Amino acid sequence: MNRGVKILKKMMMSVLTFSIMLVFSACGDKVGDESGTFLSLKKDGTIRSQIEESFEESYYDRDELEQAVLEQVADYNSRTGTESIAVEKVEVKDGMAQVGLTYTGAGDYAAFNQAFFFAGATGDAEKMDCNLDVVLSSVKDPGETIGKADILALKDEKLLVTDISEAVVLDGKALYTSDNVTVSSGGKTIKRTDDGSQMIYVVYK
Image (cartoon, rainbow, N blue to C red; front, side, top):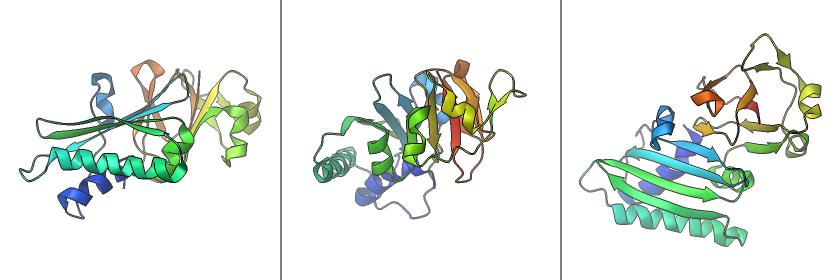
C-alpha cells in the first residue's frame, strides 16, 4: 500500500466504512496544478503533505472526515507533547477529498505515517541509520556517478532518503538519484519508478 495514503485511508475508513479492498492512487503527475497526492519540502524544514482521493458516495460525510483528521492529528500532538502537525485543509469538491497537513520536520512525517523519511544535510544521514552504500547517477549525465564517500563529502547539498511512493517537490533541484527515481518539472519533482519497498535516494540543492 502507498504509505503516504495510509493515514488518509485510516481516517476515512474510521467514518466511512470503506471496503478493505479500496485502492488508493497517488496522482503525482498533477503536482504543478496543486492537485493529487504529493509532499512539498520547504526551505525552513517543514513538510507539506497533500492527499487527494475519491469521495463520491452520497453517504460520505465531509464533516465526519474533517473530524477524523483533526482527531488523528490531535492524538499525535498530544502523545508527543508538541504541535508538530497542523491541519491546513480538509475539502470535498467534485467527488474528490483533499487533506492538507503541515509537519514541522521529517521526523514527525515519518512517525505519523509509519514511514522512513530523511531529508537534510548529507553528513547527518548516517546518524539517522541511512544506508549510504549506494551508487547515485547524475540527473544531467547518467554516466556520472557518486558513492558513499562522495555523498558524505558533500557540504551544501541535501539528501532525501525515503521508502514512500508519493511524488516529492524538493526545496531545490535534483542533482543525483538512485535508479528507481524519475525526475520532472525542471528537476524539482521526484517520484519512485518501481512499486517496491526499496529506499529512494536523491541529492539535491
